[in-house]
Amino acid sequence: MSPRAAPADRPADIDLVIEPRTRDLGDGFEVRRVLPFAKRHMVGPFIFFDHFGPTNFRAGTGLDVRPHPHIGLATITYLFDGEIMHRDSLGTAQVIRPGAVNWMTAGRGIVHSERTPPDVRRQQSPIYGIQSWVALPRAREEIDPGFEHVPEANLPLIEGDGVAVRLIAGRLFGKTSPVATQSPMFYADVTLRAGATVTMTPDYAQRAAYLLEGAVDCAGARHGPPLMLVFDSKARAVITARQPARLLLIGGEPLDGERHIWWNLVSSSAERIEQAKRDWQAGRFPKIPGDSDEFIPLPA
Image 1 (cartoon, one colour):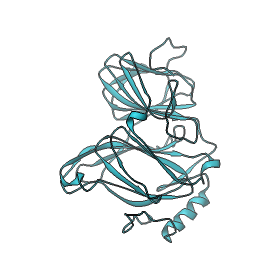
Image 2: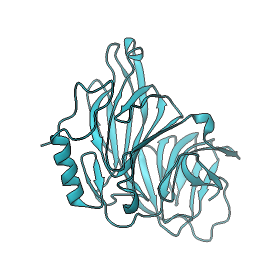
Image 3: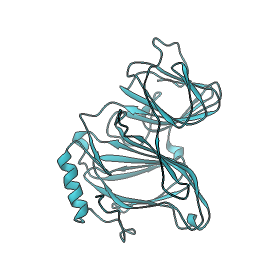
């Protein structure tokens, strides 16, 4: 893969264009669900991709995602604006700020919450970012849970010809993020000046670009946000900005078989999900120190 354009042996073919489904959660707080999609459940190991905001919470209000469980995946919270306090059943209490990576590995089971910090909610506060989940390989689905926080300054930055690529996770353009992943993948935040080009060669079997801002040309057509372009596995993906643009590149190798997803639970085994449902309903998951007075009940 390269952040610069090069002669193409074969132009990019777009397998699928995904337009997010938008939900308004109140007070103008919108969430756009991209993955899973009816015609494409996963891109590489990415099984869930939500785009939330931008919006501003009124003073005295904020984000309140109550304690809930996960199994069989890693979650990535990546902010463009605002702050979120992450707490989990490992005892982690970490404020997430723009550009940093919070990578939580659920493995055999973890509980976490995400809330606007008390000092931030005293006044009007912004929120804008991406919540994504990466499913784990079968051999790693039941590993011990873990949490990793990586500041923006520790993430590789690749620059050239009007392109800036911040590598969130995985390997891309010859660089490797310090975030510990469990399968071959990439996740990158890309900004382009008008006229600049980013090119993805078919180094991974599954690749996609999510357009956040601006307009780009790709595969003979112009595209504007918000939407995800999913590319053919063997074609080079050449994306050229026609105005200043920002996009996220995601993908990797497909996992070893189908994954079931129900609520916040992911597994290669449907029975494992049923067991996790019973465990949550019976209160057998661990509690979050400092945030255990409430929880999200198992959906009906």
